[in-house]
Length: 203
Image (cartoon, rainbow, N blue to C red; front, side, top):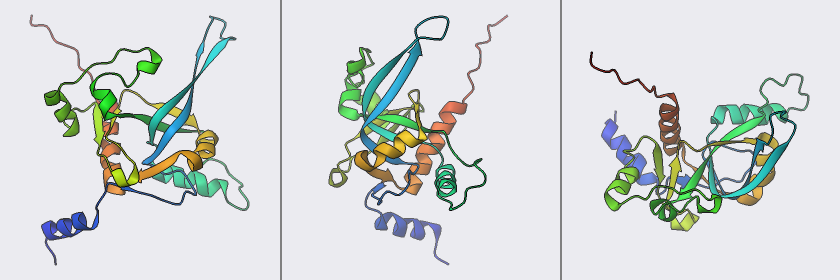
């Protein structure tokens, strides 16, 4: 039996990028979409009858919903006779992925009027090395037109399922490969499930 190290070395030599490209029939976890439209809304009065709709465009988004749920939704909706709809999804979770060059200088959300933190070389290296639990760094791949990207786990959206299916064909860029996708998913889940403990004052 081959050693684990040898198998891992063989695997690493057969993958030259954390990304791949699919002919899109369905939305997958790890899909990266470029220049994706996003809709935000907010109530404008206490009666909840009036609201503002804010249209925005995100340079990159990454699909975060679990792939098994996306696959079941797609198959269930495409059954010749669909008798039950419990596998249908109403919305899909996505995270914005910000171009690293703008993120470093705090200008990745300037179009919204928000002032963001700047990162010096030493602190940004920690983000690139995945040592900040709040952020996930995606490496560049020039052949696939993917720049260096930073995901901030405090920023996420849900998009209507049918809306993302309408735009995926035109805006699809690449898909994050399974192992890299699982790493992203686990880090995102860990960040959302962390427990903030209160400070205990000495008596």
